[in-house]
Structure formats: structure tokens, C-alpha cells
Image (cartoon, one colour):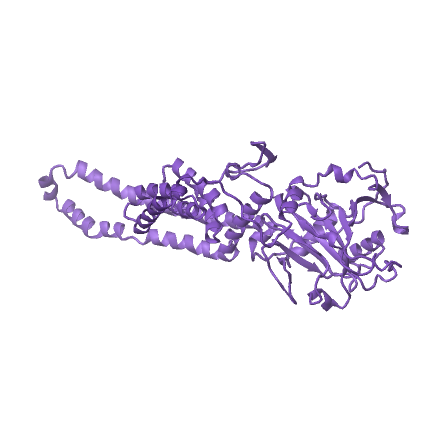
Length: 544
């Protein structure tokens, strides 16, 4: 849209000190993933020291080896004359009884390892847990699904989608690395352990291919081997009905491990199945993604995420417009805000440049110390869920703090009472690897919702501020309204959750699309019914 030129002033500058953070459930917050880099740097220092100590130890052993071989080459060539010298005889006996013993049974290697392990244990509390590895793997599979990415391209460090049979780059990362056979094995194994054979087949296929390329060589840092990948892949294909290929992979595995009794039994089982059911021999390996039993709007949701806010037909509506908006507020007369009406049903507005870069950074810094795994309503309680991957913090500031200033600013542009208790405290959210929030309503849809414990009614409106930009993904998708809004740094998006009669607006079903690349931060302000009686009056039409 074209914008009217407006005059702007800054909202004010604030500063804050760095605050320590919690590393729990690291994969759910990219902030904590990034901070893990400093932890690995410490481990690198410990490993460097270990290598230095081990190099010194090996140099000593090499020196001893050189001394002994020189003696045998120069002195012991003629044993009789050499042993005639009591000093030579003494040093031989002393060396064989003492020096070789000290070299062979030296504790120096163990001591060096212990120092390395102690250094590792010092950092262990800040290291990712198994849950983080599994969560990160699920994040990659989520990105694969939502953005229709090709696994073969992801393995090469590229983000590509097949269009008309040709791979098309949908995002070109500034920094990228290819994945190893072991990387792919771990992703496939996570899917395998969840009996998700649709994903395990694709990732394990790549793992086997990469392991084969290296000749099946094992590296000490790897968890998996070619044999492990073949084993998991064979059973995955069996579970998807591709018995012929399962048999072929199992036979290949037997070449590497011919005495594996379990695999021998599997081969016998597969051969018997193929004899008894010949149709299985011609059954293809065409994988089909399982239907979603809980997300009925999955196809629409994913399509809107893939468009990343590009819906030209939607935005061609002549009733949508942009302007410089004052809302009748004296404070906005000299400082109007750029308003963009994105949708009329539901009514959705984007306020550009709602905050400054400095304010956004201030909010993020304040929130860091209190970031915890985001929760969702579960009956009368709250719980974590895989369909919401992020961390959040609630900022309970005074009227003179940044949060108080934002409350006043939100009230100016919306005309609503945004201060607690009529508005909830500002919630700051940082998304994790493939971080997302699947389709949901912000307002309570059940009378047992924890929201009503606030005694201020339901959430009448949502005001969400984008505190950062992202490189790709992360759009806000309105499912039934059939449009999505890309992340616009420092902008804020507003919509009504309830009709004027207090009933929930079903058209506000929305989602936070997975972040494909980048570090997404948002701040949510939910405004409740109570306190808005004269700001948003009821209509004479009870259906409105």
C-alpha cells in the first residue's frame, strides 16, 4: 500500500544492563540456543588444554622410544662387549624393571582425561539435554512439513521446495553448513522412536547415503553408524509397507554384521511375507504424510505460512487503506502513527513504527532473566505443549517504566484501557528452533479457562508488538480469514477477539507460523472486557 507522509519523533530512549538467563528447555528459545555458543567455546578451551597435555605426554613417550631404539641400534648390536660393561648392564636391567613399567602403567593419560572430564562437568548444567536434541530435531521436521522443504536439500544446507518438479530456493542463508550422516541419523531416530515412519524414512535414507559415501567409517563423536542407520531404515520401510526394500536393506546390513540374529530373523520374516503375499513385491515406496487428527485446518495453515504474507487478492480489497492516525489523541497530533487496515473481518490493523529499536532491545533485555517455557490452557490449568514452542516472560513494571509507557501508548492508539488489571501484564515471547504456535484463539472458549480467574472478563482485544525481524517464516496467519501477516520489525498488530455482544469472534483463529530462519521476539498485550464499557460500547444489535 502507499502511505501518506507523516512527521515522526522518537518515543524516548531507555537502557538496561545484561541479565543472566535460564537455560532450561534450551531449544524453545533461540536466545538460549545462541548463548550455548559461549559454553562450547569453554569446552573448546578445555579440549585444547587436553590436546596440549596429551601432546607433551606423547612427546615424552616418543623420546623414550627414540632412546631405546638408539641403544639397540648403536650399543646392543654386539651384546657381549656391551654387557661386559657393568654400567650398560645396570641401565638395561633398570630400564626393563622400572622405566618400561612407568611408561606402560603411567597414570598421566588418565589424569589428562580426568582434567578434560572435570572441565566438561563444570559446564554440564548449561549444556543441552536429550530433550533439547529431540526438540531441535522435531523443529527441523516441522519446518520440513510446514514449508514443504526437501530433506535432500536441507542436508546440503539449502532451503528448497519442489515446484513443478524443480527445486526452488525459498530462502538463501548467509551462513550454512551441510549435515552429516550422524546428524541425519539422529533426526531420523527421533522420528523412529515416535513411530513416525514418514519422517524417519526420509532422514534415514539421507543418513545411509552419507554413511555409505564415507565407506561406513566411524568417528568418535558419532552416535550412529552405517549399520545403525540401515537397521532403523529397514524397519521403517517395513512399517510403511515397502517390504522388498526392507529386505534389501537388511541383507546389506548382514554383510556388515553377518551374525546378527535379530536381523537374520527379520530377513526370514520379510522373505516369507513376500512369498505369501506376492503383491508386496510391487508395492511402491511412495510415502504419504499422515493426516492430522487434531489440526483440521492444517492445509490452510501451512499454505498461509508458505505465502509469508503475500496474498495480493486479499490486499486488493478497495476498503482496505493506510493513513496517518491520531485517534483524536492530543499526544498523536504531532506524532501520528502509520495505520494499515489489513482486514475488515476480522478487523485487523497494523501500526508501523510503534516502538523504536532501542525500546525493543530494552524490553528483550528486561525479559531475559524470566524467560520460561510458554504454556497453554489445559482445562482449568496450564501446561506446555508441542504445538507452542517458545519461551515467555511477564513484565510487571511500574507506570514510569517501559511497560507503563507502552500501556499508555497502546491506550492512545486503541482508545482502550490497557493498564492492569484491565489489561494483562506485557508478555514477551522468544521463539525456538522451528518455533511456532499452531492455530488457536486468544480469547477463552470455555468458562473453566484460567483467564476468568483474573475477574476481568474475557480477552476483548489483542495487541502484539514485533520486537525483531526474521529472515524467513514466522508470519501471523489468520486461518478462516485466509491471509497472513509477515513479521514487521517494531510494528504492532491489533485485532478484536470478541464481538460487541461479548461472543468470541471465530474469524480470529490465528497461528504463529514456524520461524524458518531468524530470531523472533514479540510482546503481547491482552486487553480484557472490564474497564472498556465506555471505550467499546455494546451495539443496539444483539447479534453484532
